[in-house]
Length: 295
Image 1 (spheres, rainbow, N blue to C red):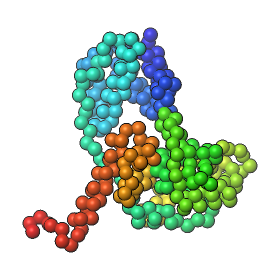
Image 2 (image 1 turned 45 degrees about the vertical axis):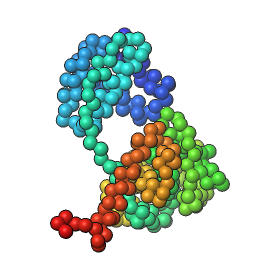
Image 3 (image 1 turned 120 degrees about the vertical axis):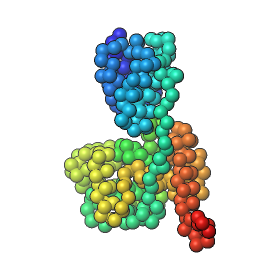
Image 4 (image 1 turned 60 degrees about the horizontal axis):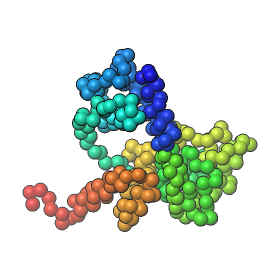
């Protein structure tokens, strides 16, 4: 088989067996394409440990996190080849993973969230954006999950939405009363005007009557944040981080937050304990009787 045939078999396994998201598969495909360019015609069955190390050095100018991702993709790819008996040994298995320094995710304070969400509502687009922001902050769902929400996933009477996350995993996300209020207003009073006589199973619609894209929503979010005087760099994921951080600071337990966010591993959720601890430390240092250096 050619290198491309091996890559395709692996990508098919990611899609049909592991049921990874389209974006994740495209990311893996891009990494494998870069590796193929580096190999310059060499068969992947003849790749040795030194080839992988040279490839990582070739990308040395990249951030450690990116190089770690490249190695993870190759390690998983070669594990697949070994598992399927195409190879006897994974050339990546003894290579040490690049050390990635953890950066804490950025989030908005509760005051900043209130400021962001309190923007003027005049047009159908405003009410759609308000509903989208309220859903993001009330449920902590990913922006990809938000733009892919369908009408049959909304359960206003029961106060929850049904979300299909990574790997097509289904989870129930409770809504707040404020979120439910603005979602209902949008659905009942403004969505049809955006549809322009089209039919769509998607909840959130753009000005052309089509499902709004991640890029379209991100553009709207940045505009609203600027107009509302939010000085922090903000993205849709900022609201997800804010949701989790505020839940934890108000006493929610990590396991519950893990389920609500749809994290498969609780270690991913544990990052929010660092955020809360940092805030507590910062709050204490502002206390008038907190000890200062040299006191």
